[in-house]
Image (tube, rainbow, N blue to C red):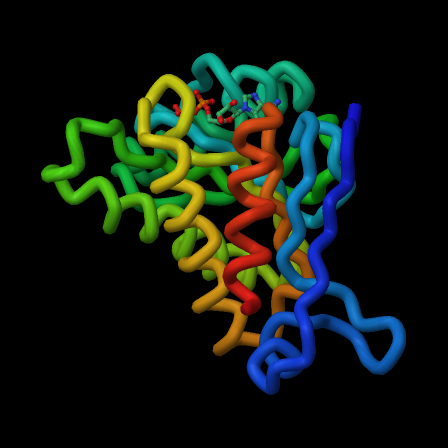
Length: 203
Ligand code: ADP
């Protein structure tokens, strides 16, 4: 169930108009949005799964996505594994979406937080960027991300949210294809973090 929709509009800076708004004239929409709720319910082209390297399912958002998608998703992940092996941190793979309303699932692996000196920030950036590139390569225009690595993998929430927003914003400014990127937050704390970051980002 979607609990709360918090779209944030960008004011009229040149970069904002050209890079971070979609549509024309009065119908312009923010390309980055924050939503609080369950990512599995979204009707977007792609939802991103915070997977583990095995690609064979796990807890947290990974478990929720597999439960909602049904066994077809696990079969698809097994096939990818057979072809490509494990998915290292920072990389992403795409599968069909089983019973989900989304058209595809991109499985990306965030870094496990080990104190910050083990390349975690770069790997988290890579996870977001490679997911965006893979969605574009498959001609999709809307994508929803969970807060990758901020659950069991232990990445500090504020730092992870900052990387998520900065990486996506830098990508969207340069590339027009993706019209909608939704950051899906599970709890109030994360929602407020993202909301604040998006607001700061445009000032
Ligand atoms: P990781 O192993 O990458 O840390 P987790 O699944 O443990 O992944 O957590 C990632 C984030 O996803 C956490 O902020 C968690 O609260 C959130 N989350 C868990 N279930 C859902 C869901 N159904 N929809 C959206 N976000 C979720």
